[in-house]
Structures are given as C-alpha cells and as structure tokens.
Image 1 (cartoon, helix red, strand yellow):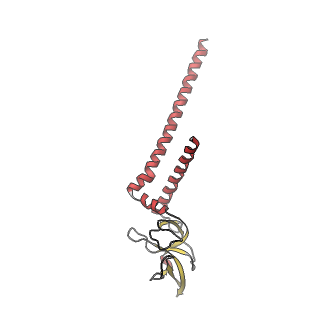
Image 2 (image 1 turned 180 degrees about the vertical axis):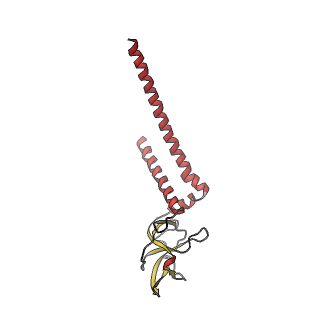
Image 3 (image 1 turned 45 degrees about the horizontal axis):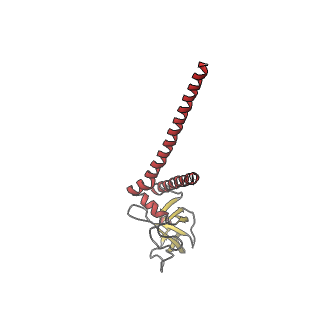
Length: 183
C-alpha cells in the first residue's frame, strides 16, 4: 500500500510540474519557438477535440494538409487552428485557404503567410480545459498552489522526522559515551 501511495505521489508531482510548465509556456510564449495553444471550438473534430492543447511550431513552408494556427493572439482575439486545403501564390506571397475538419465550407478569408503562428505538431485532448481553468486565480490555486503546498508540507514533515531521528541518534551516542566513561 505504501508503495502505491508513493507512486501516486510521484505521478501527482510530475503532473503538477507538467501543468505548471504548460501554463508558463502558454502564458509566456517564446517567439519563433514551440507554443502551446488551447482549442476552444469543435471545428477541427475529430482530429483535434474541443478543449485540447495544441503544440505549434513556426515553419518555413506550409503545405496542403498541414494544420496551422493563425490570426491575432491577444486577450480579446483568439487564434484559429484549421487545416490548409488550398494554396496559391500572388506576387511571391503565399495565400492559404483553410477549413475546419468539422466545417462544411472553407473559411471565407484566405490566410497570409505572415498571419500564421505555426504548424500543429501534436495535440493532447482535454488538457486545455485544465490549462484554461489554471489560468484563472481560483484554478491556479486549486491546480498548482494547493497541491504544491501539500507536497511541500510532506517534504518538510520528512525533513523534520529526519532531524528528530538524527538528534535522537546523537543523544544515544552521548549517553553511550557517558556510560563508557563511567566504567
């Protein structure tokens, strides 16, 4: 039973670290590198489920079939993640026609190359719900801070037990030295 609890403890610890890292990466993306985005609509189902986390990376070239994330990424504007269904070049500039897999028609507006944030490398279903919740103050407290406090408390308790054990051992050694000295 103790072994199972220890395994569960380390899994929880790894999950907290992973969520914290994803949260940090999604809040402070490094331009030109991997980014984490949350898919909030079902337009790409079944390939990418609603509430998934999508890891994207900028590429030099995009082709038909690639799933890309494009558009403004601000607090008010959410980027779109759709599949490229057609490409064309005008005066050396690439234009992409995109479409959500679950949508009947292609998107009304073509996407310019400079609007593309990156290509979807992979997605993790439903993790986006947790990340979105963790971005809110109550979610951050429940998902990151509370488990971190529990883990820190557990570690402090272990350190305190070890200090007590060492003190007792030292006290026993002192008493044994007194006993030897009296003989």
